[in-house]
Image (cartoon, rainbow, N blue to C red; front, side):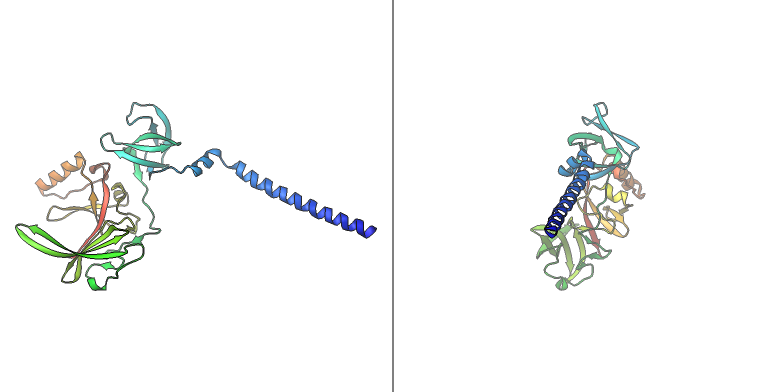
Length: 283
């Protein structure tokens, strides 16, 4: 009888300990959830959409309309991230996501966060992946994971000063979208243009990003003898998609008239100007 009572007591003690531990575990999990800020939970559930920028000013006013007289909805501190949906070149105000609603900030005081190189093919000073200047066209593989899945040769005829020039191009595509174009000279790659967003510079700059990213990374203006203007970043050339602002137009016109070097900044481009492509040429 005594042994039976001992056995019963041991079983009851085991279940009591198990229930206590289960309750403690449940409480710990509950406390963790309760400790989380409800606003953080909402932010996790509703991730703000848009390109990631940050505030350069000490304090940036967030307004209800794209002007400096509208209601101030809040303030953004220096260095704080901002999800930018679009930038209006006419008003120079950015439409942002602010506490789950659409609001506006002056585009003069924000700059893009340069993306990391994670998951992208990093360009070198001579090319991208298997597409390299002075490389033999026939040595380029038919596909390269994450960069292109098809290659097609095309013939391009261009006219310069009344003379026609015929070139053979290699067009590289991924999912039907062009990621690179190589110009061939006697079977050798002599020029490369890379508009694909799956490629970036070592600093993380990719085609499609706002042109301000290039300047934030330290890009300089490079003007060629034919009048072409590119942006150069640590040995890599970039084309820009977009127009100049009024200040940019003036700098370019003055440069052409005086023959002096042209030095551009991000404000010399329209607010919607983007990094167009990495550009390589062998002269």
